[in-house]
Length: 301
Image 1: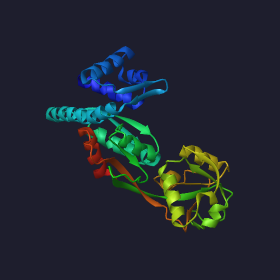
Image 2: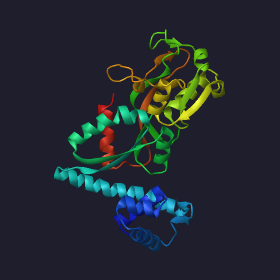
Image 3: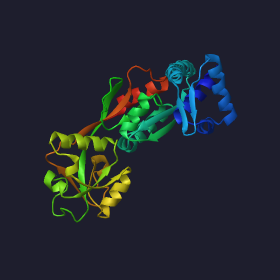
Image 4: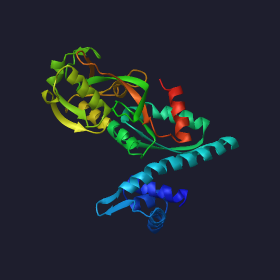
């Protein structure tokens, strides 16, 4: 067994597919199959359930997967220290992020980090906050960026950026009211709403805030759930409905509106929130991941 075979095993487990792992690793499918067979033969156990619907880990496979994370990170730590010794740090970072930090935080962080370490490359996964957390707990990624806390004793969250939700309406709704003035929750309830999909940090903050005011979600007139914020903004501008969205999505850095419509606060709801970098408490980050985490904490707002 060697490091390449362990990496192959981990990619098959992550992607649930021999062919997808082969494509990602630039290997032939027979080579991927051979790598898995070598490990299974050496450990004398079956690591993967090979089913028509996809590949899943056996119980033994899960044990090997979790330990493989530590083995790979130890190996990467050695390489990182050698690269530091040579004055040449390189590698690839895979980061999962929800939409707001992906658009409004990560570009500047990556730009600054690559100025210091130009040989480092990035792969950014666009997923909602709940999926970021799920991927970390499952060991598929080391860390990520989220817009809400999903409680789990194995996770650590560090706040890196603050924000609040605003209520955006089509241009003809409450058109005589000043921008960012307060609406009442009763005025909000009257409007057809377009909301983010289940699992988004925005949706969780809204739901929690409504529950604090003892308002059930079924009191709202929800006309659509949409995953993409830019699609929601377009639907609002066309008059399809109103929405809750991040202030950072509603205004650019010069405080100019980026949505064709009206933007308000909702006086009864507590819609302030933090964005967080989240990682597993009991799992050591790769050296490159640790370096990027430290850079993030030193350079975030």
